[in-house]
Image 1 (tube, one colour):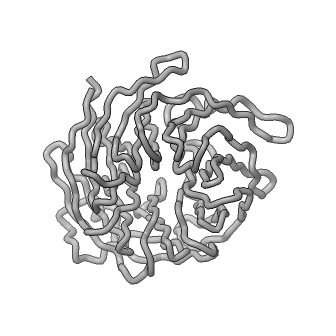
Image 2 (tube, helix red, strand yellow):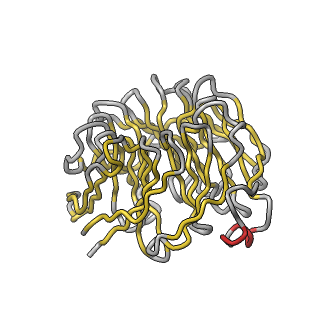
Length: 348
């Protein structure tokens, strides 16, 4: 099993903080230190065909764009972007769906996305944005130690803050929703992960996951399995990847979770990002520049099945994300070297 670099996209000279991918249109959204959001279409990864579609209005955000997330099920495509300027921008394609999927309609000078909304409320820089599985809720997290949950309409133009969650004691680094439930995980500088769920039109912390010995930078829910079997992986300053499993809940709705596994150690420094794909594989990356892939062997035991050191030269790697294109698994990484790298994964 191996990882092979298919393409390195160098679209800026500044750090690339984050990426997200929309599987229907095959568009990568790229968030970078230069205040810009870039959209790149993957035409055919195996023949290395990619096209820069758009650079969104760089005057919208006054500081770096830290996180991007495509809204699930949205037609036309809709994107949220969180910035160090403490705001979130919401973008939508201005033409019809068919135009957005036809690469011949675009060049990098075209204005094919319009600004729908600017969301304000956080006191400090925003570190993460994430949509719920049905696209009706947007979660944002910040250095101000809070998680905000926003409810929106089908058009994605109006946003109402329905809850401000302030139980973390330090910066909140990352938020992610369960792929089939309205269950939210937040990861923090306070070394914990908190799980949040809605009760009687209010959002409450239903579990606190303790065990990491440093900042938790990222987490991701398992994509496979039945809806009642819930697992979460996480990556931390303590250079470990952990897998957590839901055990049940009491009459008050409080959930019990256990740390099911600590994955084989390969990283020497902070793990900034983890991603769990639909085939059960976990990928991790971080400040040591190593990209690793893990597979579960049964009995809660995992093994490293592929790794790539210095996957962004000597730079730190800020995010990794699994994507599936035409039934094949690929990995996308973003780094401090200003590159977005696309990797093929050979599972044979």
